[in-house]
Length: 244
Image (tube, rainbow, N blue to C red; front, side, top):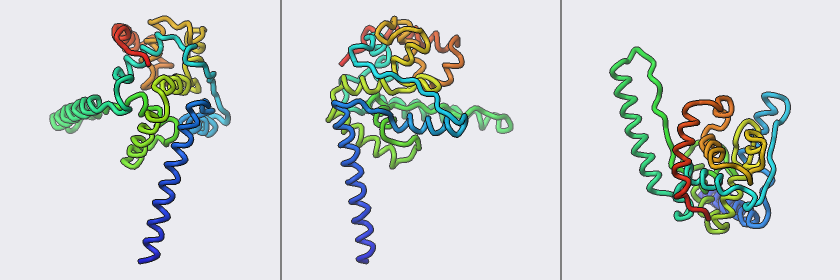
């Protein structure tokens, strides 16, 4: 019994130490830009395995050197309540849950109607905020488990309490993936439009924002009708997007 309690105690101690490590790293990000994120490093290792080398394009720029058009476009596309929530948008999570439930019901109905025919699985959508996405990309793995989701929640609260909204958005825009080996707003602006992130037009910014959920896919299909249509919708929302 004593041995079991000792192992439980050591496990709890390790968990607390890990949280303190994460909090310390996040606190440091208030003044020091992260050199890389967990997601970026995993992508680099995948490239080495596939190609034997790394393709990496990233250039950190200050918040003021990123066009407001891109900030508004990303907020309008990814998290329109960014400046007002505490890191978690419960309304968005509830809406995503309901949408996923309806999609799953429709998938099951189609499958029952044609059991011999292959039916495309229901598309699962999320309700993650910009802060949650940053927490996951910065410090966590890409696995989808309840334990990792719980850790993401803890890190989201830490980011919101230790960093300003402006700093959170600055780190996000400088580290998010925008294509194969393309990370951050400056690299994306140069890669797709041959200009700096400070000079992006509303249309260009909206196009980049729409790419975020699946950047590698849209990098290969820049002229897709979905990309163009969705970008027009985001442009219409940009005027009401609040900046930190």
